[in-house]
Length: 379
Image (cartoon, rainbow, N blue to C red):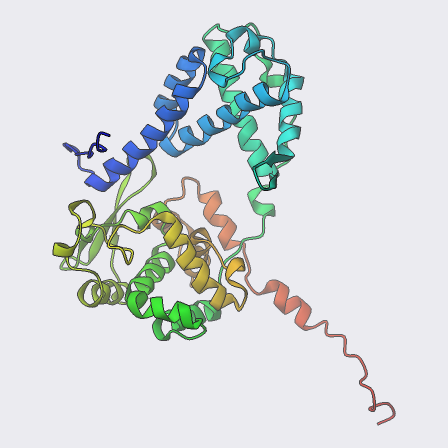
């Protein structure tokens, strides 16, 4: 059996090798899905390559694959036994009502496995994305003159809460302090968690400090390198969506946290595989931490700050919201916070400005209903 080929990067761009490799990983996943789908969708594949971000492209392709599987397994809209065998005429015969029935199917469906039946339930936000994926595909097929009608106008609308209607979940300042105390001292951790904490406490603290100070996205933090940091100039570099590069200033607390981790805890380069030597945050196995590992770490420490179960802890995106609300609450300009967090529209940042963290608590604090205790009557 031939051994798996090693991927070598011949990088002439300004991007670090790990960013190029991450993008290549997404591209390979996209191509793997495309190979399974009908060939007449090639024009749609080309459209996605040139017009949407890699992760959006991957999400759209997964949605289309799921739709094609639905056609084969759940309907009589095609005679194909495999999604790659679906014919163009099958798509040409699909009507808007067929898509609306599919979206309704996606609200809740079950998948039978060998030892269990898994019930999947999707929110309106997820349904809206699935509808968007199909809309883009059918519009592109119509533009390419592969189908006779543009059926997308007949798709049922999906009510998705406006951003201003959604509850903004963020840690309050006192909860942040409890969380940082936990990562600094090991308080509120289980005995098993403390065993790992003894080996990773400086790393974990640096991760939380970067999230809280800069409101980084998960993939931005996960792809940070040691070479991203220039301590003499007091700055570090991150790579954002749409190939944007940003230089961020270091403050004292973040500098101390990252430097302490690098000097006192991070494995030395000579013990690491070449592909992981520049990675900033390493797992105990000496590999670049995965997004999932970082997500679980954040969930653990935020659950301590919130005084709730580990399962109910917050995601890294909630720490991004925490950074936004904290910065605005300290009187910083909305436009400055917009630039720091890389919001495309200032209206997104304004949502955090209108978020009053203690308003509900203040309202109910004046509405205490005291019940008379037994034995106190007549006193």
